[in-house]
Length: 244
Image (cartoon, rainbow, N blue to C red; front, side, top):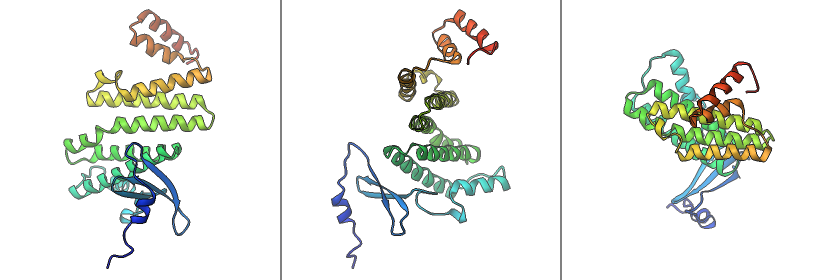
């Protein structure tokens, strides 16, 4: 009765590797690009454009687009339980596709999907039915910011723009720092593994491309090391409009 509906052939031809996620691009019957990700119990297939599952909630490209439309009509709307469930579905879908883009080294696409997730997080924060539900999402914001910053930097390096890569990392570090303050984690910022990885990549790019630290970088470092006289001189240089 169910002959021909199983996935035996695909699964046998593409073994699951628990040590490393397996991702590939394939073509659909109509020639469109699709992403496939091998997971423990099968294969995930995602669209490369629009929402990963290809659905259009109430005719909108994504749920975020639908919520943005509702926000314009009613700035104070509160998400229902059903809407919260649908939001979580979209979060999971974009998480899987973001991870797939990173694995495929398609960094610009990973940045775009991270931006979608961050905008959806903002929507949740502004229209959440309760603080607990908000916290469920906000606790993951730093991870998305980290992945976005890393992907944006690597995309810039592919375009031979090391300074743009450094700017992307600096922006990511600042946004993560703000998030840690909002979450009450500010004492953990300097020791956080994600922060350390971005700082390491920052230094690696400076070394590889022989780019010196800006005055703002030097000022932040002086303050962190409690070198206040040096910090005062650096502030004076910035105030005079010296190289920032």
